[in-house]
Length: 374
Image 1 (cartoon, rainbow, N blue to C red):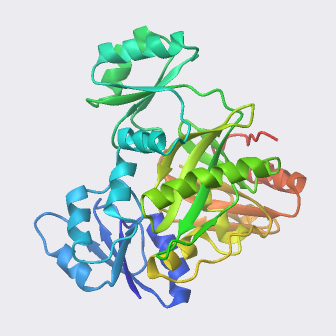
Image 2: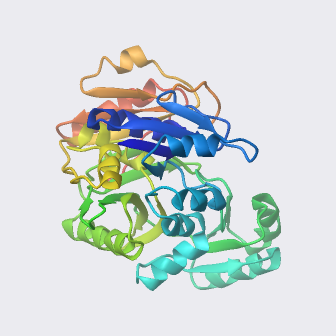
C-alpha cells in the first residue's frame, strides 16, 4: 500500500522503516519546512503550491506523525483520502480543554483543574486549588505546547501575572500539581474492525518537560493497575472510533490510583522501546491498523529501557560495545534540547538493565542520572 504521512520527522521515518518489510511505500508532506526524514518521497506544503495535490496523487491512505497540524489542511485531506486516526481524534488531542472534557465524560480520573482567560483568573484558580490542598499548580496553554513548552509551574497566586505573560496564550488550563510516585504511559492499538491490543505500561522519567528515560514492562506495576490503564485507553479508543496507535500518559499515586494527564494520537516517544523489546513495534502495529491488517503481538520479549539522546551526540562506539544495545539516530545536527536519536537497552533482569542504563548515561553528554521508582 502507498501510505502518506503528514510530517517528515523522526517518527515518520521510523514508521517508514517499519513499513517497508510489509511492502509499503511512503510519501511525506512536510508542513514545517524542517524535514529530517530522509526516506521516501518528500513534498513540502505551502498555501501557494500544488504539493498537496501531488502528495495525494501518490498515496492510498494518510496518517500523521504529529498532532500539531493545521486542521483545515487535515480536513481537506480527509475528504479526499482515508485518514487515520480521524479528524475528530486529532481535534480532541489538539485541545486540552476538549481532552479533559472527554476524560470527564468517560469517568477517567484527572487532577483537579480550572479554565482561565486572564492573569486575574489564573491567580484565582491558583488560590482555589491551593486552598483545596494542592502544593503547586501547572498552567498550560489550551492548544499547542509539547515537551514542556507552553507551561508554567506556580507555587503562589502572586506568580500568576508573570506566568500568564510567559505562556502567552489567551486561554489556559490550570491543574493541581499531582503528588505522584511515578509517571507512566500506556500505548494501545485499535484496528479498522475495532480489535484492540495493549502494550505493557512504561515508566517515564522527564527532565524539564522532556522525556529522558522510558522503561517497560515496569517491574513492580501491578496487574490491577495494568488492567485499569487498559480500561481507560480502551474507552477512549472506542469513543473516538479510533484507528491506529494511541498513547495515554498517566500519573500513579502512592495508593496505586492512576490519573490521566494527556493523550497523543500517534506513535510515541515512550513507545520506542517496542522496536527492540516487543514482539511487534508500535510503528509496525500502527501501519497494520491503518491498512486493516491483523494486529501483531504486543508481548514484551525482555525488559527494555529507552534513553533519549538530547542535544549532543555520545560515545556511540563504546555504547555499542554493550551487549543487546541498539542505536537509533535521526540524522539531525546537534542543538540544545533537540532529540538526536535514542538507544534501546535490553536485559534479562532489572539489575542488569539498570546497570547498563547507568553505563550508557555516563557516555551521553548532559544525560541526567537515571531515576526510577523501583
